[in-house]
Length: 310
Image 1: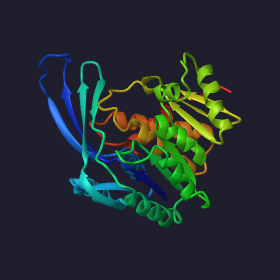
Image 2: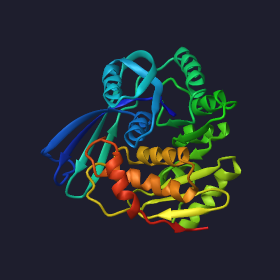
Image 3: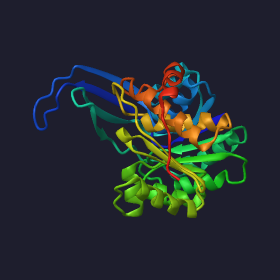
């Protein structure tokens, strides 16, 4: 089983247009609402791939029931710390003509220290029965940028593999908690190291910085260009598949779900990348924040090609 943590859940409102006009009027062709959050997405994707997941983290009194109802419909266990406030709304504008998504994300409501103490207690209880812990996404106001380090240190004595998917200070401080896997995208990698990356070799050099800090595996997602995965001995690249993209939100979360499935199945680094890219591809062919399905994943998996980089 995997446990996922979502500190800053959201409601994704996705609208579809055909030909975005900046500063002008845009007609909406279709719209949908998906209760969401990065850890929640990972849990749903992993469950739809055939695994068992539990969601914990922070939830809110106003509209928090929408989050829990979505998980209930998916048959996913959840145990959140509920605080006052309202679940934030993230607006996604999908331009069908260019297959580009423009995002307008709210920050999230204030959360106090007492909620985080309760969360750490829940985490310890659930992680005793879990194989993998996934910490992903942003943090709401009032939460220190050291939160992921603190949560990783909370479970450091347990025989559990940890995955961290965060950016900026959350990522940099989180590294001090020695996560097993990190998954920055290209922008997050450049920002974390204050560098400009122009080649796969640049990515390998940058990834080694994190290996020196104790991370065991680094995956760098490259959006429409695919993904690279690296450990201390090997590195692989998988180009993106050409598919009809309907929604990119949640693709990175599906990569992590694929990784988790591969780890549970005891697969090697190369196959971890294959699983991750197949899961992400199976996600982007679905609208809004709908996640990958087992059927699509199995169809796509044989199409994923992996090249050895080192």
